Amino acid sequence: MSERTTTLRVLLADDHVTVRHGLKLLIDSQPDMKVVAEASDGKAAMPGMNGLVATRALKQKQPDTIIVTLTRHSDDAYMQELLRAGVSGYVLKQSAPNELLQAIRSAAAGGQYLDSALTRRVTARLLGRSDKAHKPPATLSEREAEVLRLIAAGYSNKEIAGRLSLSVKTVEAHKANGMRKLELRGRIDIVKYAVLQGWLENQ
Image (cartoon, helix red, strand yellow):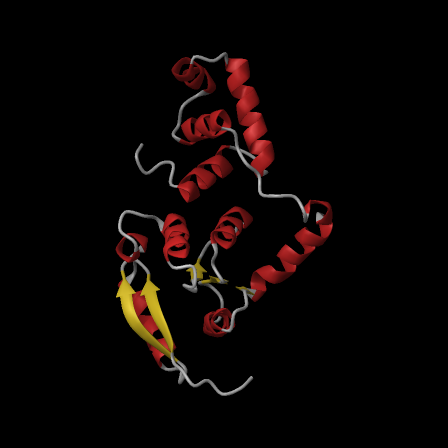
């Protein structure tokens, strides 16, 4: 790799002051990086938005923006949604500091970086499901999304049926179809997906 001629400018967004301070010290100690701004959360970085929605909005408004996510979440659903949204790096907070530095440099060079703790698991999963590699991302029907949104908000199948003027069996069918498309296993997965989509912000 040729010697860098420019300094990588980094915006930090984290809701813990201590974490931001530690990350700033780590990044600023590198000769090729500098923290130029800080935000307390996704809302400060992009007002009114959670992390995933903020990522999508940033990529839409400034497609060349490079985003590296530092998170404690190692579950596939969260990782997949952020990668689809356009993040260039996904690093776990519990990993060694060097993982984050590698991710920033890799992303800045135009690559993608996945935390080494996740690489083996993801590789095994992809190899085991290579038949799905060329399928487009799942698309929910309007009704399926509506049913899953209400389930995540805490409504029972019977209550949803009443709200949408549907039979309970129809609600169950929409729920099953939506979960199958998104590969969700239960209510907890539905809630996680709803949070990532920003569905519950106005509940």
